[in-house]
Length: 231
Image 1 (cartoon, rainbow, N blue to C red):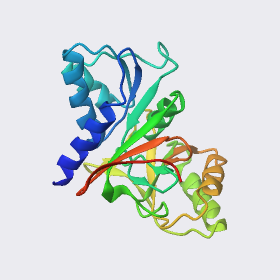
Image 2 (image 1 turned 90 degrees about the vertical axis):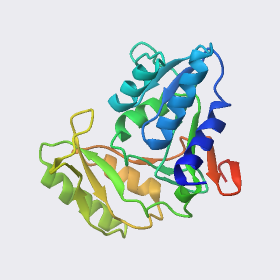
Image 3 (image 1 turned 90 degrees about the horizontal axis):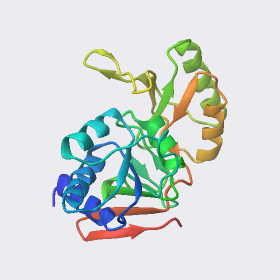
């Protein structure tokens, strides 16, 4: 199967965990979009759910396909979030944010009783960091924030380029009105220490390390679908 087909099969398997009446966090990205399309078919067949999208892009797709939506203000506690990931390690720690929605994704996941990650097996890594770590930052004082990130990561033995994410020749702006610095650190041996160091920097809004949030990863590969639990 090609990568798109693998994503569809992972999304289909995740749908098996969605029960009638659930309050559902709905992720962002190409794999999550396949989940939305399959979920819409279930909704049209009579399944009752209420979804909280993690981005304006996901909200637009849900509205187009007829998936009923709410907000975290209206529905502040969720039963389950289904979302993709850019990297997944053996303990189900994640790097997310390649689609630029990491802040809302993390808020929605934290409001959920459970989080299921759907991915193809190319996203599995032994140690996080091959994929550049997205760091969402405030536009005010961004250069000072960049210097602080470099110093904090250097103190942890990490180095690598910080790149301002661009789209169509302009800085990418998140749904929250912030910018993203993609940090090419390479392997991150101590993800918790890096998480704490980044969150201590005033200009950092959030980062793409999702630690201890996922309870299950549904991974599609050439040999089929498998469920990965935290080791």
